[in-house]
Structures are given as C-alpha cells and as structure tokens.
Amino acid sequence: MAKSTLIAGTIAAQNRKARHDYSIDYTVDAGIMLVGTEVKSLRTGRANITESYAGQQDGELYLFNAYIPEYQSNAAFGHETRRPRKLLVHRRELRKLLGAMSKEGMTLIPLSIFFNERGIAKVQLGVAKGKKAYDKRAAVKEREWNRDKARLMRDKG
Image: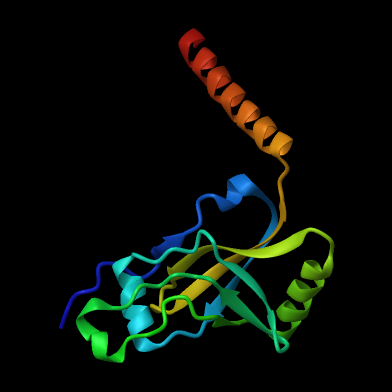
C-alpha cells in the first residue's frame, strides 16, 4: 500500500492569488463530494484551484473549473479532471452564501482544499468582492511601507 504524501490537517491545493485579486469578507469550510481517484490525486498535492469558483446549480452549491489531475497508477478508473463537484454545506449556510452571492459584485472563491483531522477533504470558501487596480496598488504600497517601517525600527532599536 502506497503511503500518502500529505498528512491529515494539511493543505492539498491553495489559491494564492485570491487574497491579492479579491477582498475577502468571511470564509466558510465546506465538504466536497469526490470519487476515490480524486482523493488519491489530491493527496499527492498536484491540484490547481487558481481559476476555479463556486456557484449555484439546481439549488445546490458546486465547485466549477477546479483541476484535479487523474491518479496515475489507476488509469482504468480515472475521473474527469475539471468536472463540477458538489459542495456540502448546511442549509442555513447555503442560504447565507447564496444571499451574499446575489449582492452586486460578490462571488464565492475557493481559498484552499485541505484534509481535516479525520482525513476528510474540505474546501475553504471565501465570500469576496473583486479589487480594482488602484486597490491592489494601495495594498502593495501599504505592505511595502510596513516592511520598511519594521526594517527602520529594527535598525534603530
């Protein structure tokens, strides 16, 4: 039996550009329905959720355009790499998320896919609003100023 490369509680895929491109109001952890080969492939850590998003389909919440590569050693029972995957949330959370998405400019983006303590795959969703170019520049300017300020304080003290 092959040993998994990821330990429970670790991140399988991360959307690093999300916090740069969006201002995130709050986050929610959701379960995700996967087939066996997708779980094995996630444990290798080669998934990509940079261009993915969550949305509504038939009154349910789905993760669209997430890339989970086929598991190499089991090609006979492979899976579709970019299929929509159902997200599992409580009904109250679903209503809250769909209400937030109905506001102008708000979207649901996956921030990371991780395995919890029990080894179950979860998706951390962020309710976010897209940043404008000047917002991104202001964030970079503030981050650089904080870095320079810390450097000055360290040199003086």
